[in-house]
Image 1: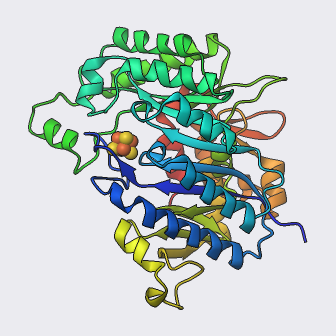
Image 2 (image 1 turned 120 degrees about the horizontal axis):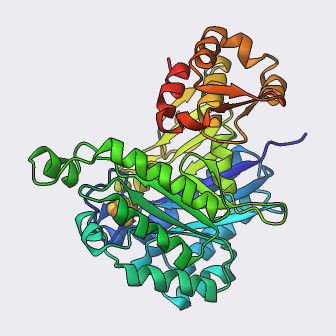
Length: 395
Ligand code: SF4
């Protein structure tokens, strides 16, 4: 039997300090829980290994957070050893780690490279002290320069930097200067995110109380348009709305792990608050770190819990929902888009038939286009309003 390849997402919910805009499942001040947490995620890996028969091929592993670079090399060695024991990793192509530039040094990066990591994603976010401070980041721009330099010295040839635009008060000219960072740091991949003002965060309160100006959406759209043009002029390929990679006939630095999500393929989510997509179930783990850890203490096991005791919720995805989700995430891929022949192969139906009314409207409003190879993509001038497209595939 040919098994579908999975990806593994492992969530590391620890940070030195909470950033002002952050609404991720992450906590400061609980680093003392790291040893127990590592034990729990190893147990969860074993649960999945047992459930899936130890033979499922895993092609990519992504440690996200939080701040995965707070975990030491010995723990990663233990975690990776367990993954190799519980899955077929013979064709693994990418092991990625998110890192905060303020938490790494050359020795640490060398040790990660030695145990198999081959991609690092640095949360640089800005080159400007004023915005790093507003966002509550623990690092400065010099830390980012050093971190990327050390990663290169350690032998990493696949590096990403995250940058944030649309920050309150940020001008287009300042953002243009930030983009020059890309030429300075010379990484193979860049992710750009518009700053979201998420309810419940300190930044949200500051904006609500008038202490900080609300970001200007039109200006953020101009920043995105400028960035896309700038990056394309530097040979970066905009393969996803927010993601740009050097990608040509010889080199392809697209993030393979994230492509798995955008192609709506299965992945396992390990750790507190992690999400997964396994055997047509969307799975959500317990967010609370102590509660997640306690689930793996034998006397707390609840046999009725599906697959892993760390799970909080799970939902069966029927075929219609799977088709909707495939369109919604696939259309984020700006060139790959949705191949009608591949969709038909997967679902035995044409998306244009199943979603006839939706596509009639999308095509007549020129929100999407279909080329001669039967690839559906978002129209290039509608990328900034892509939410109008995705809405068609939500119940
Ligand atoms: S480092 Fe990242 S995960 Fe941690 S608080 Fe800041 S934004 Fe959130």
